[in-house]
Image (cartoon, rainbow, N blue to C red; front, side):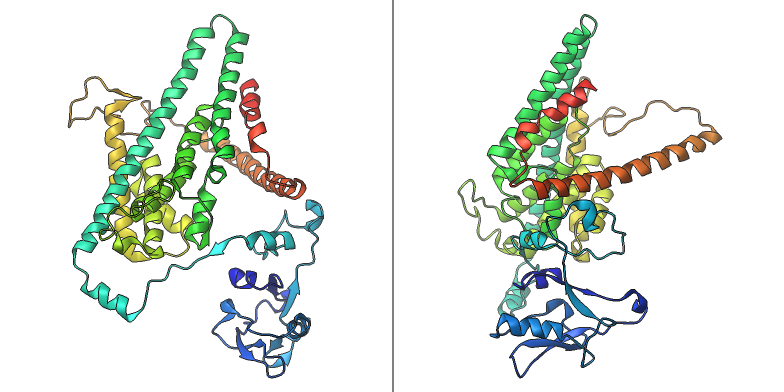
Length: 454
């Protein structure tokens, strides 16, 4: 409904209902042609409320009059029935006056004119299978090797994601060892000198993490999870899965996590794995300048639907390899990432998660940093090498431990709510007050400096 109304040049209008009539069922609206103006005007039906199309050569004044005479069961509408209302909030109003920061979960958000203008820059796509007769005949006659190719490409994708996760994790561990070496070497002699070295090192790593995101690939900024979720739900954003974004993302996440800031690689790993899924499934790259290497091999993978499935599998494998949980990766994309789910791809995505976790686990078991673990002989694995978060000690428990746990939960829950509210408030205020894109690059080293001083 939102994207259908965004296509209307007159702006997004929200259907609202008086609170006193919230219990009564509402008739759905379809379309019928008006004889006087030639417009398609709404009528009572159950078909196309989410796909209203205004097909007319009438003037804007006639269209506005028609909107004001919106029908409800064949009669003109009044204030006690359904009505269409344009958002009257001014974009220049400060945040507390727009009443948008304290919305309850049941409130329908009303987009401002600036938000509507911003959303027009996104392209919405559908992931429907081709239904032509020729395609159905071709698909019915396709040999079994096409399905084998699909599974082989999934296996290749899983292995690549597992190796990528291992490389990113070990590089971060190597850089963090350098920070610990500074502490071991200088902590006993001069606290001030040690602190300056740590803060300067963190600021330099933050500089290296932010520089390519600003200069080479702005689409690699942030975690990348909202962009992936937007794509899997029908919003196509430019250059979020190309090779340049992928390489810059891998570079930046390594240095950003190594700064010591309270950030982790899990969110960026989802974006990285999704980009790998998009690239491996198509077998081509515009950035590198080559087309499909084996056109006949990838003929079954060239549709938007196939690319959607592989990106979903990449997201699941990224989550699974990051946490060592293949079932968790499948459930994550099923519940959180994709709003449209085809049960037929569940086994394929789960297979991809299993193989990615296995690859990452095997490499982690035999390598520590970039060195082979001493005493490891294939195929044996030492105890604890395959456990991501190992706890060697078993503390004695007390039945009264739940009392402080409840207090900690209440305090941290309230703090999380306040943090989320302040974060959204500051982001909206920054987007409203700054004339252009936020200057992330000059302020990138400030965060590590503040954290280091604290």
